[in-house]
Amino acid sequence: MNPYSKFDSGNMYEVLKDLPSQITTAWNNKFSVDRNEFTNLSNIVLTGLGGSAISGDIAITFLHKQLKIPFAVNRSYQLPNYAGKDTLVIACSYSGNTEETIAAYEDALNKGCKIVSIGSGGEIQKLSEKNGRLHINVSRGFQPRCALGLMFFNLLKFVNESKLAFISDDTIDLLFQSLKKSSEIYSTESERPYNDALKMIGKFPVIHSSDILQSVNVRFRCQLAENSKVLSYSGIIPELNHNEIIGWEKYDGYNSPFLVIQLIDESDHPRNKLRFEITKKILSESGVELLQIQSVEKTFEARIMDLIYYTDWVSFYLAVLRKVDPTPIKNINTLKESLAQIK
Image 1 (cartoon, rainbow, N blue to C red):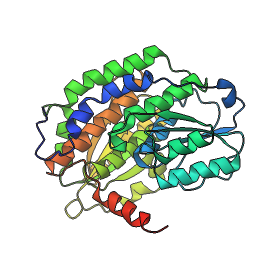
Image 2 (spheres, rainbow, N blue to C red):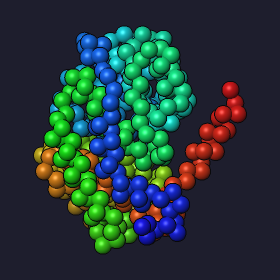
Image 3 (spheres, rainbow, N blue to C red):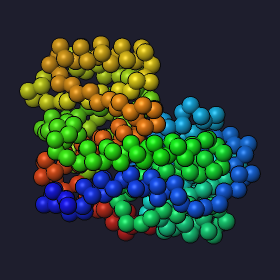
Image 4 (tube, rainbow, N blue to C red):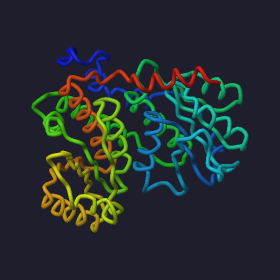
């Protein structure tokens, strides 16, 4: 039963609780991969937007110790100029009708790239079928940002099946069990995600992380925008220590109440760990309120997924605490409708 149904028209509470099941659904998805097609690659480009593109960001984080060739995420109508016949393009569009991704797919065809698509149908699937390219089909019925488990773990399965990286069944089971446990914990008001959301009421969130957690950082910022209807800002250590940190010298918390959220992982570079602590001290002395979020799961992969799941819950709770419905995306729909009228 959804205790927040008054403000949650799309039942995002239950969708979030059930996220672990998307892992097993995706990992059990059946599709055939011709491994010979994906040998001798120079680079990988995942093209997509919004909730579909984030799978690529997370994959770069998740697989950073395994990937031997460049892997980039493209959020544009066109592919990078270096894309060519030795490039694998993974077109991710949950709806299958994202106009930028369709255009990038057609660009990939023109450049002679190897192409795989992931989504729930639409024009992307038609393009794949028409051109004899692999399309990995996922279940319909979700907001794209709520289908992360389906999109990301189908992407992981493709990477595993094509031998571009190795992800064991044990790893997938560990992630499922970890998130299943967290599902029961994070879905109650007595737990940390709810309390962290309370701390964010009336504040402008500034999210800091190292590059290792950049994908979590981006996901959190996007979820705050789409779920909580709250603007936020992202900064990356150590880069922010060379510019942004100066902007806090004249901080006036009365007129502009900010909350700095540090996303930290034990695998952060030792010097970056030190930078987090020194940055915290400097900002605290300027009167800035800070919040640190860190996962204690045992493996890097489990910590990444745990942090994403945790911050997804924070964004949900912040929405309902502000009496905002987390599901509707009025401005996105208005923009798409306006674009559709102009060909």
